[in-house]
Length: 553
Image 1 (tube, one colour):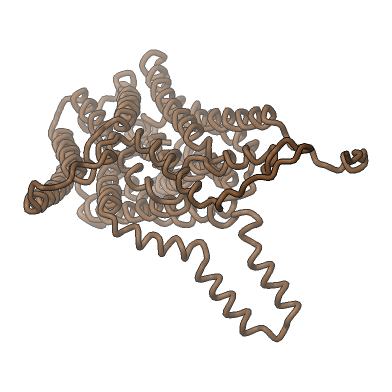
Image 2 (image 1 turned 180 degrees about the vertical axis):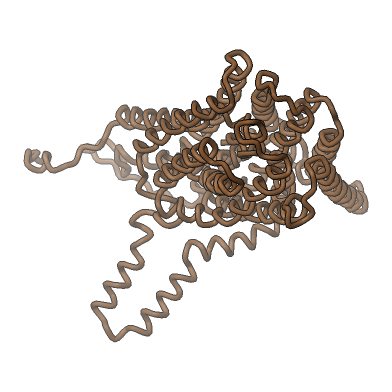
């Protein structure tokens, strides 16, 4: 029996107990969700278009359609990649603060700006807020353990959706029941946004991020190389080759190689193409639908404008369809193209109806259904893309898809909407957008037919469908977590027979090894939490419409 030394015992650091860690985790998540909720409270956002076209600003519909709104996709394309890199390099919280300040700038320009140039500058600031959404979506993953990714992702996403819904309802109630003017509503929005900036100041800044700040482990090779150079100055050539080899084996290089291999999978290619082309068309409709509503019902009575109610209903339906999509059970390898074709042709019909209807309530209903149909496919696409990718590679794939979707959206905007292009009025734009969706649906349908023909040519003597082909995304997440656990167990070294002694009463493993192994077998985060990396349906385009997004987070 070895006597204990009090001096030695005092030097042993005390680790925080599970209760303290659990309380800290709950406080972080609660504060982040509260911030996410408050950042969406912008009751004047649903009424920006009638505000710009009304007596307060007195812009013409042509100016808003062909000069002001097209600036948004241009500036968004310019700031998307820099904002993505800054988010990771600065570790999230500075970008969240920049987003809050950009929102404040948007509403200051709305209230004080008088010219088209002022409104174009407002669109530039709004594009910064859109690009900075990735900071909120990925911020939570750097604060909690991987085992909690799914839970906190659902919490943060629910907070954003609830904030969007509450903001739309509040704005509609203030306008309809309270008789509040659009200008006063924007002052109320500015007050809420200023409060959200104050909340962002107290967000905890994480110590690590996905790419640039990966902890001390990522800095060990460079430190070792520097130490080697000091010990052996003559080994410069060998050191240079070692550094080049290390760069070739860097995180980004490995991710690019993995991305090239992953693109060979048909499902990943299919849903990535859907993400690029369908989301581009979706956002074009969302950008200009408020202008279309104003043309359908150009009333000057603010109490008769129900844009907030339509936005609230579309948010609610989008949340319901996103939830229902998690329980769809089909053979994804065979029926994905047909499902996409059916949803896309429905969207084409709804957009065509929007371009021809003269009744504002039918226009509202068509937009609600259009947005709900898109949000139905978002979680399916998210899971089909992220199911077999690492967390870092998943973020890269979604970033690349969003970038190419922005390019497509920008090109169409320049040709169709910009005054330097065709400069079409909003109804003709929607007619072209319906043709765009119709062409996409035809392509998807032809792909489904070709898949069916190939299946028939292979004959009927095929093995029965695998069980995973019939699972819903919710069930596949649980299966993926179990497969990761099995993989970790197979990677363990062969267990050796523990030697028990009468003094120990225990085997070779210590008391803390069980907790360590439990953390090693945590579910894969990419299938659980990356739904929140989808652009959340949480914001509205100034002068145009709701700029939602992969959501919704």
